[in-house]
Image 1 (cartoon, one colour):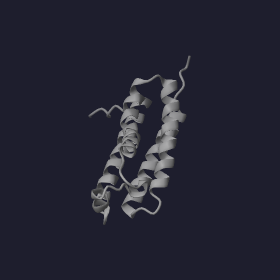
Image 2 (image 1 turned 90 degrees about the vertical axis):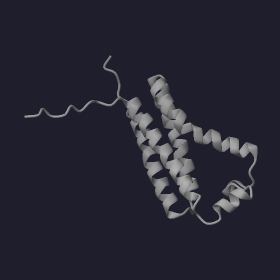
Image 3 (image 1 turned 90 degrees about the horizontal axis):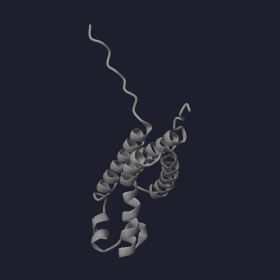
Image 4 (image 1 turned 180 degrees about the vertical axis):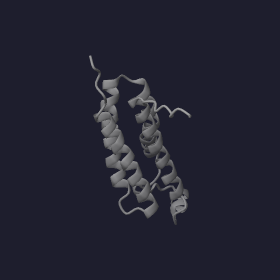
Length: 137
């Protein structure tokens, strides 16, 4: 008889990093599929960024900084100290929940779907960081 498979415990840091990576993929695919909506490419070619208006270097830098956060959080979750990691994950994920709630207002249904998945992933990050296991010592 074959012995049962071992269920290895996954460290909370790895779980957080994987949740950030999953969130990032939802951001990427949601924005990619949005390119197929009517007039999106026309607006881009005309130099407009949806509700942000005309394209400027500052707006592109701002959105770039915002969108690098998930990839940086994946690394930060593994490399930082537990206390700092816990609070930064809670704060950054909370900010992204608020941003996502604002962005999906009036969006196409596929984008709302991605937004809901993103919110669930972000709430999982908040919950997991909040419930971070304590040491016995």
